[in-house]
Length: 257
Image (cartoon, rainbow, N blue to C red; front, side, top):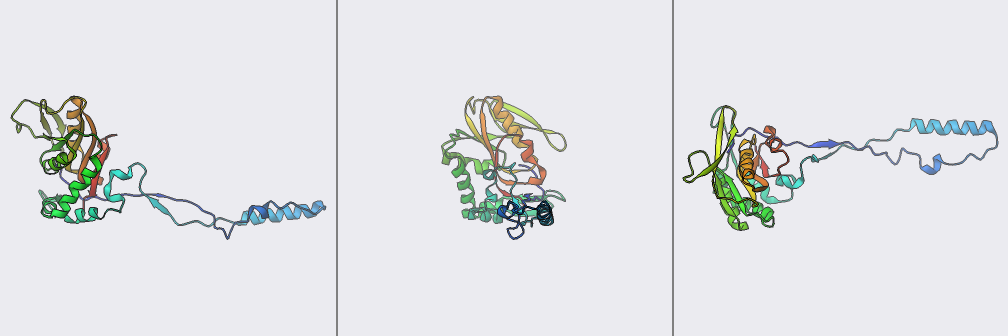
């Protein structure tokens, strides 16, 4: 789980210029041949045509804003604005200011878990996305990935693999160290939990800086697993965790408040 700050979404604007049909001479008008035999008359008409063309300036259409092309629409479920379940899920997540320390806006998913309809919709949205992607492993990051991962794994016919903090797993483990704001931490997985060539989904409740997701990706790829995608309920875009994942796909349901 990662600590969260207030997020904001971004749109890029494309400015398109469209001539106003009322202000442009038709091609037929501009291309009308000169029929007078006099050179002086032809010269005067040519100057008149040039002046008319010079003085007309196309009217500008209103700005058109579209979502950034750098993010695929399916990577952010709340961007399509079509599924009414998304708003319900977003409103069910409680934001607690100054927890666990001043300045932190904590995204509390326990209220989402209390809302059985919103919780089911959350699981269903992930299942609908991954049921036909031939995924055999759902890897859940401690601790909240353990909440969302198992029901998704059961629904799509995959096994659930817990990615745990140090000294929590009883058997032989493989570990991956990653950086925190101050110091480092480790993520561990049981040896033999996955096999080379398997296709995995990594699930957590939230992505902030992306450190834990990166560690999980490296851990799985070290043993030959193909990470198909990472998925989170909440994203805090201002912390740019998505960028840290590089070209690894990320799918999220809502932006943090």
